Length: 222
Image (cartoon, rainbow, N blue to C red; front, side, top):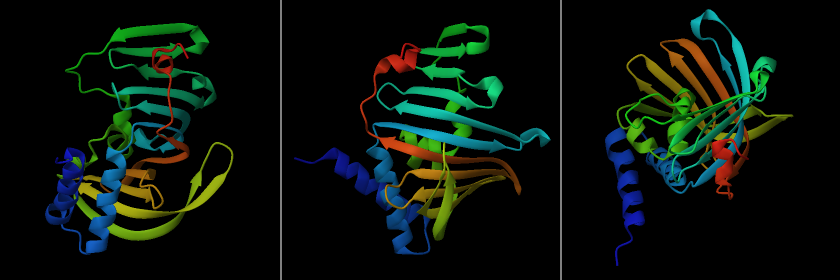
């Protein structure tokens, strides 16, 4: 009997090699393994530190991020800045939730399946890796493998040094520099540019993959 999951993985790896045209076979195989690790992801939780320079204003936010692929459930809880601390955005697949602790206000709104708005899209390629459609997202991009690098990731309490594969993704004026953890393929640092201007840098730490998650956290009950 044909294992359709294995067939899908094989097709994706061939696609990456033949269509994206990396200069070295090893680089193509490396990105193919990243696609496979994305395919195998069921849940992910982490801590995100993001610095934005959009609209000529520099800002920094920190938040915990939880995602469950079954039902496309997501939760973001802000830890910084102080005026956003405790604010929660969540989706349970049917409803969008928003909690603002300063006003003790909760909002619940039915998700419009036709809407293109999604809080995760600002996370760039990291979000598509987590969501499971990374291959589709990068298929229209030029991809360049920059090599393996040792990078420092700023976490909730300290910094961690790890080895990561550095890739550049470009499409028109859009450019993303992404570092994927060499040990597990997870994007741990993303830089998003408009032309040559850095608009967003995010670092991902405290990563937990495929751990059980209670669905109540995605409806503001956990």
